[in-house]
Image (tube, rainbow, N blue to C red; front, side, top):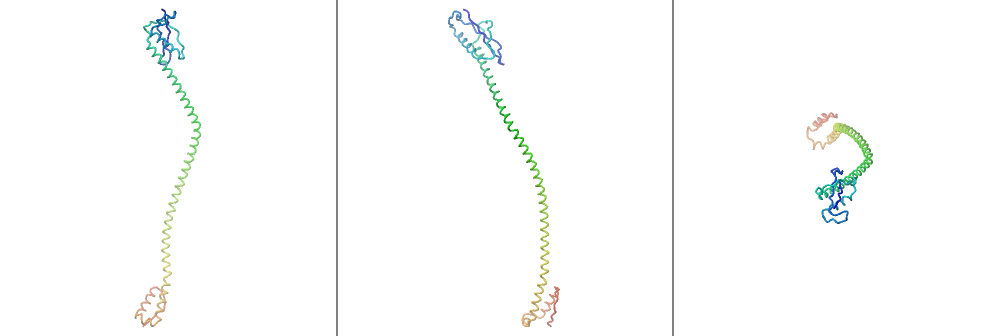
Amino acid sequence: MEGFNSMVPTQGNDGSNTSFIPFPPSHGNVSSGMPCNDASGSSIQGVAAIASEPKTENQQAPQGPREPESNVDPKRLRRILASRQYSQKYRLKQLQYILQLETEVKALQAELAINSPRITYSDRQNSLLREENNSMKQKLDAFSSELMLKEAEYEDLKKERALLMKFFGIYQSELQLPEMLKASHQLANMGLNQPEINDDFMEPGVPQMLNQNLNQFGVGGPSYNFM
């Protein structure tokens, strides 16, 4: 019986086809159409059919020279197919991730184009506000110095006012003193001109004491002699 030997490409770590693994020849008569009773041969043919379904960059390699049946391992074929499917999924995920990153970059660039004028305007406004703040600080310092001068001037005016009030009180007392002395002198004259008051209420020597007190304050007047 003659079998067929198809070559299955294997894939390396970088995704390239590095070698070819041959399928073992079937134990059935292919040319005569006899069914194959070997279970391992049928499973290998099923794996080969699955491997031929996915489309990759590299087409199926041409058939190579036949190898002995002892070099073919079904487990190795399964590992090769699983590695190929994993690499395809990994490349697909990489492409999806790259597309996602490109979309995010475009969105960030659009946001930057929108926010860049706003940032420039905000910086300009901040610079204007800083200048205004500095001018306000200078004005506040000037007002503080002026306030200190006003407070010192106010204290001086308070002291001057207290001194003037003191002088005014002394002046008022000096103005009122002659009137008080004149009134007391008139009362004394009225009392001396009444004999009954003199006899009843005044003792000898009191008029001399009154005259001495009046002369002491500098008020001139007639001298009375009661002796």
